[in-house]
Length: 240
Image (tube, rainbow, N blue to C red; front, side, top):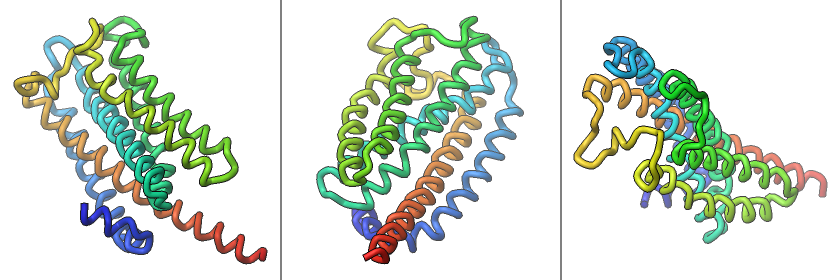
């Protein structure tokens, strides 16, 4: 909590992110290369064949899309409750990233579903709730763009983001609460992962690659948002 409080100051955040974002970006590239190398080296699955390798792209995208929405909802909460400009900037910056990762999860899931289920898309509980997550991202960004007053836009979009957070446990538990064509929990299953350790290594490397890439991109986007707002404030002062 202490570091969050410290970084709530825009100047301190700019100083920290100036070196942290490149470090995380470099780590993301290194982890991705290691993950891709180990992913192509693993043997084909006895049921899924070579299609198992799609999971090394798909699952990290799903994890990151959900994590990003948690960051969006958290930033929106702090912006609404404490009226903190940096929280609003963080929320605005994270939404396109989360939408991109969620979209990647949907697309790669379709590529996996076609050979496994014989269809690109089914209205399964897990797939449908994850699509709803993507639509909440789109709705948040559309609402931000539709209102000219940035303060009002942040409040309205923030409320929508908090409402959408209700969907996160639905996505996670959808395969438990409903009869689902989608396979049940494999990684976070009760009693431990059900997947072989040979597949867990590349999955872990790719997941950490996505997480660090997300962190680097988020910090870079927040920095850009801070500078955009400062430039806007200076432009307003210059017209007076």
